[in-house]
Length: 152
Image 1 (cartoon, helix red, strand yellow):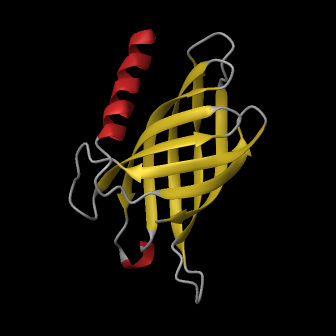
Image 2: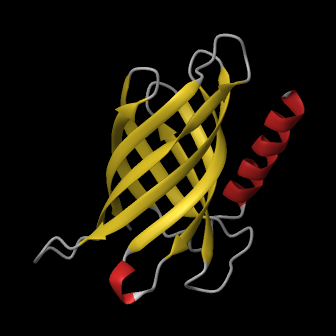
């Protein structure tokens, strides 16, 4: 289990190190359920580890805090169909710490909101997944979170 945690940490670290060029960051406030009510912040940016063509999968790195620190590497599909413009679908895996280390798999959905006359790129998102403990006292079980954020 420690080898899995080490390998995932290396991927996250390398992704972060290579995401310094043109990362297209976002910042969101999130709240949901993870063994209890959890509210916090999440920062996300594109990973430059590899970049598929526009309209395809985009690797991203998410770092958040909601009752504990977590980091995830996710792949998001930027939908470019007329009925799905502004929707991002994705999934990923990550690690976190809240009294003990845990790993998780999650899916996410983000929808760009049109805020009328404000030229702000605001989005609404939903994350849902399952966490498994890597240490005895770590969180384990299903989780879900709504998030409201701003893209830069």
